[in-house]
Length: 296
Image (cartoon, rainbow, N blue to C red; front, side, top):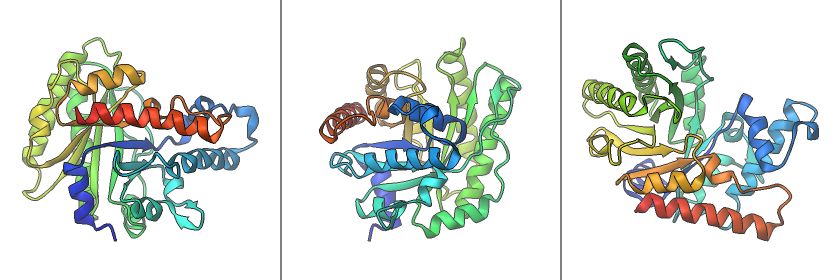
């Protein structure tokens, strides 16, 4: 059995990265298109979600998808409730000693004060308890910063931490993801304001509380080092944010102690039309390069 404490130690101290396989809702057609399946190849939402589940199953069951490089996986709710063979997906991952996380946010509000806050998350407690029963270790939720607006940035950080406390109360470890858009004109200044607000909220957390941060790769190398070293931060993950895999890996390698939590950068070269040998080769190449950048 892969215990909670063992999972915590793996995420905190392990060498490797997090695979983000949590595209959902409106992002699913785009993810499928990248995999080589266009909207004419499925007739409804049920078929669409089955196709994305088949893609994720192909990735997770591949011989190169192993815990010596993959520490954890972020799952969409339908994936969490799905099966690989006759085994629930979280259970399958735990048997491979890979830590399962669940994406819990329900998308973004309209732009206000330069940011997009998360929409309300209905039935959060019941969903968290169900996830915990299935063996899920933690959660992920994303909001986005586009402009250097101090009110908006403060609001986004406060919302992330408020939901984080609810998640901690249910016995799971939250990944807080206040993404900074990579095309933001004042990205460097935004990151400075964001870090200041995160440090303030960390100081207000209960003594034994632990969170994970998932942040856009910063303009200034090692800018988040004080977050990496913070006693209440289990680990800092980096999102690829639309960078191609080469750019994302180059930037990641410049940030000591930060590990990848990539989605598009991981999956970009995988296609449904590939033979198993071609698919394995492409996946192994992506995994190896992201791993190397994460441990540099």
